[in-house]
Image (cartoon, rainbow, N blue to C red; front, side, top):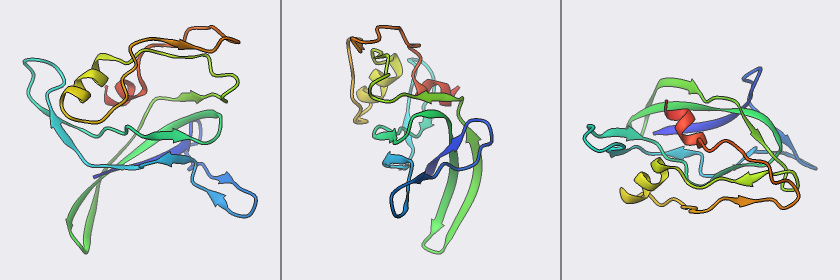
Length: 144
């Protein structure tokens, strides 16, 4: 199993969003994933991937995702195997979001292997800001 946390891009400290009365989790969606064995590229052997298909961040800013890999042996024993951080990324407010890029080939591959992902064939732009964002998905940055 792999668990994801949101951390500050420079200090790697966990992010906490302060609510009116309590603090909230900065990530919305499912923060744990089990592995899928799939062939990402034709002719290559299968590999384990941990897709996060329903995950978003509550607050704009610059962040990294921190991944923790665990082995669950039984009900009473869990072993922390590894930890890695993603590249830094920017979260935009809804008003300043530049555009949504088309889905990548790896998203199509995940879908073909039975993993439920949203596939976007076209680029959707914000009419107020029609600037282009990089087309490499966050998922690819985390894998390689």
